[in-house]
Length: 167
Image 1 (cartoon, rainbow, N blue to C red):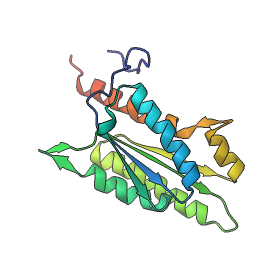
Image 2 (image 1 turned 180 degrees about the vertical axis):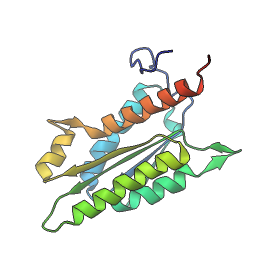
Image 3 (image 1 turned 45 degrees about the horizontal axis):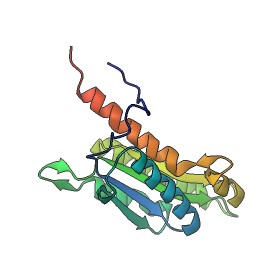
């Protein structure tokens, strides 16, 4: 059994998937760039645009609670969402607030993924300044919205592969 996602052979992998994207909008222009890349990536792998719901949280600290609520939603005892992508930015400032926000955000997002067994990926930028943030939202370092979405897609694939193992 092959446990590696083949990007070229899986252009329609998401055709029946339902995905939630959560965007922390404290830095709205950054969130918009991350969101656009995430949506483009989902379309690239065949998702029906009607199967993507976008939610906005006030900031990164609030993302995990919204992710938990979405992960817990069910239809006929099945998870409503197959995957959740979280996006946003926390930029270091004059105080250590960024450390507290980043720790709680990352810990909360990981907890959602573990508790609900739904791929919930971390696309929240944790940067030192605006230049680094812009660089990671479509600039010189790529777009972390795309990367977080690819991680979610690959985890969906791996979980399906793990569930279909036979001896």
